[in-house]
Length: 208
Image (cartoon, rainbow, N blue to C red):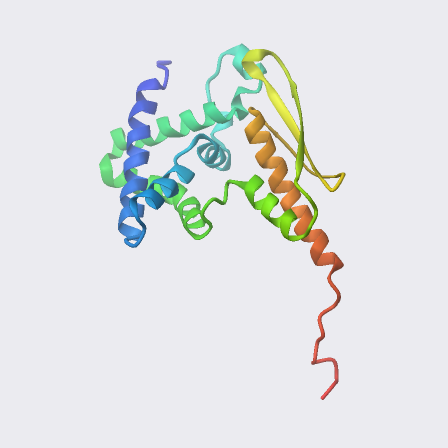
């Protein structure tokens, strides 16, 4: 039977939200409501769920229409995120609350911990701008190109820092492409700085 996943997505969205909300409420008693909301949002969002879906190899298991399949639907963030929510919903229907809680936390806990340790970790553009300001490299500039039909646009971004391309990214939206390019540039700048640093004065080289 080829039923669409909308009903399971609807259920799974609530299951996912409640499991994550309950966990962070219990695990981070010192965080105020606003910070709890930001922490939850950093995990329960399309980009993060799509990343989890890719890690779980959800894409190859999807049944898609011919057109959607040919246009790269198995890699679309929205489709992967919806499929993962449907999967969580199915686990709840089949195994009940405790099993759904176990499965959801098993897959989301690393993202929760990382987000709690590094608030705003997804906002790579802000992190990059702060880094380039500290290094007196100026404000990063993003060059954006789009391709494909309106219903399946793909965007690429290049991060220009001090006149030099330092990062590249792609995504299904301009914002996503810029974030990926910013993350790439952030890593490139840090690597460059590390390579330019003089060797540390190691006192274990035979000196006494």
